[in-house]
Every structure is written in structure tokens, then in C-alpha cells.
Image 1 (cartoon, helix red, strand yellow):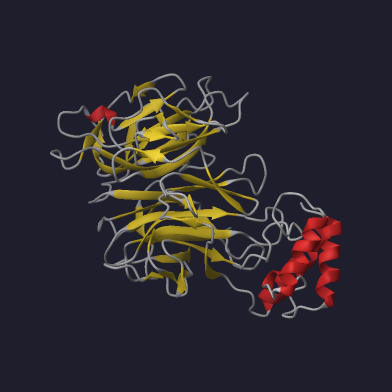
Image 2 (cartoon, rainbow, N blue to C red):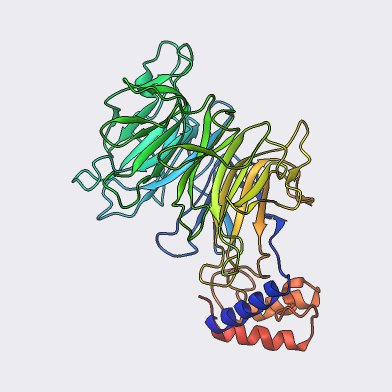
Length: 464
């Protein structure tokens, strides 16, 4: 299979040089629902499972976690239960003992049960079943993060979860830490902004703003905040494990998402923290923090930025990775665009997300490399409220990237049963007779006897 991948990689390089193929939108068959969070488990293999929240497989309700592995979708441990709306808003991998145990999947959102197990808005999947984390949370949870607040000390990373306080509840519930046994509040509670509202933690991101300097990496906390203790900073603040630190004035409205991105590639500008939300100051909806000051990125006249992620949709091609941004804004890009760097501007993605009654919106972004070591650089997955992506019917969930080769990550496994047997030859002949595009093995635009030789060669080379 390796030789076949090298041949296909050469084809892709030549085609890119000639202008084809190019990234494009496609629907994602086999699943239903509008995902609010996505995460790939790449610790064990480069094309490990890809998990989607609020997604169900065809024939099952979209109120749980779906997983794609080697081209096949399935549900994970049963549906969520509880009051509406049932939502999974964030997911991370974390282990209380990282030195001796694989990381488990942790999810947060609004749900009372997962697979029938009482969990109170946060749950852990250990590969076999769902389990609670203590008493959970009395309110829905928007964000999770893994952060080592004693850095190189003996404690190890902790699991942070963010929610919102409300009238009659202490503000210190807005951000808690889990060590594998119990939840603990922060040493200093976060204050709400404005003072009469809830303290909200909507997004968290780990970022080292002085690179190789003496400062440890910090946990950046965004939402609806007025600061922490004596530190005043509106809607975003930095925690270093001991104390809070302001980011200038902050922003004048809520922070919804964050991502670390190098918008200068290998130039002199170091990576920076990019912050999105509904604010209009210091700039509109999307801002860059370099550790010292705020600066503008792309002017977004209205709406809100809901999610960001870094992705190289060009693979080994000449273009550098971009920061992909989605939300409820109109211009630029119709709810989704690719920011290519401070000297290069942005690309709209073939018309973006359209078609929803009352206006389209993108809620979540995820990246999944479906063929691992193969030549395809993977895809950007978008969940939201839309009917079309770049004009392609894609009801609330779509993929942007180079088209996947027919047959998924392992082409000769025609029946996708995980094994190469004689039944795959029978499957290939059936699909050839049905004029299925899959049967164009050599991708020459025709189905003829050479495709049988191509399939036999790929079968002999095996799967990665």
C-alpha cells in the first residue's frame, strides 16, 4: 500500500501544480445532526478515531457522541438524556495518571445522563462505558481544558471545566479543577462582567506568550468576566497556576473561542493568541494578542466568531497553514473563511455556509486526517445551522478539503470490513458492474480492464 500511496502522492503534486485538485466542499454521508464540538484521538495512530458531539449515525438520534474510525461511523456508548437542549459543547483527552494510563475522552455540555449513566453535564469515556466525575456540575458546561498549574512540579496536569454562575450561586463555581478524585475551586474566584450578571467561562486555551523565556505557559480564560481578585480585565484573563494577569483592557463583550496560530509562518513574528467573540473593542469580533498588546486581524463588521482552528488544507503543497474561522457573521466568507496570515489576508471558501431559515451559522470546527500517512492532507469539518456548503447540499455538517479517494483510507478493503479477503474482489466486481465511481481505481475517468489490474496491485500491497 505504501507504493500505491507514493504513486498517488505524485499524482496529487502534479495535479496541484496544474490547478487540480483543489480543496472543495462535500457532504458527510452516514451521520445526522449539528456538531458543537469535534476532537481527534491521534495519540495512538495518525488516523485514530474522530469524535463528534451532537451527532448520530443514520437511524439513531443525534443526541450523543459519534465516532469515525477507518471510514466507518458508529455511536459511542448510548445517547444523552436530560432536559433540552441536549448538547455536547467541548471535549478533551485527559488522564489523572498520564505516566501509566492512556488518556480518556471527557465531554461537557448540557445533559443529565450519558448511555443511561447519571453524569450531571460532564462525563468520562474510558473506551468501554461512560462514568461521572464526582457530582458533576449543577449548570451546563461550555469549556474544558487540560493545564499543568504547577508546571514541572509533581502534581501533573489538571482538568479544568468552565460554566457560569447565577443569582444565589457563588462565583467560584464558574471555574473548577478536577484531579481525578474531587473538584476544587480556584484560589481566587472570577468576577462577573457586568457586575450584576453571571460570571461565564466560555473558552479556554493554553498558550506560552514568551516562548523560550522564563514565564511558564498560561491558561487563558475567556467568556463574560470582570477579572479575578484584584486583577481587573474584561472578558479574558490569564492564569499561570498562581495568579491572574490582565490582557490590557480585555474586550468589551464576550469571548467565545481562542486558538494559537503563527500568522507569519517562519518569519520574525512569533505565534500569537487569536481571540474570537461578539466584541467590538479593541477590534471587531477577531483579535490577536502577542503577549503585550492587541492588534486587528480581519475586519468583521457584525455578528460573532464562534470557533477557530489551524489547518493546512494544502498538505505538502506551497501554501502555509491557515486559521479557519466560523460563526454568525456575513462578510467575509459567508460564515466561514481561511485567514492566511498578516500579509496575505483571507480566502472565502467557495461561498461558505448558506440556506438556513433565519440565517446560517457555523458553531464548531474540527480537523481529521482520514488516511493518516496517506497523501490526502485530511479535511476541515464544520458543524452548524446551514443547508448548503459552497452550494453543496450538506444539512448542518460538511467537510472542506481535497476530495477523499474512493473507498476511504484503505481502497482495496472494498466492503470496509477491516480485512482484505476474496470478498473484496467480489465487491469490486459488483461495483464495477454498477458503474460506481469507486471502480475507477486508476482515476483516469474511465472504468475498464486496467482498473482490475490496479485493484489487484493495491490489494497485494495491503493497507497501512
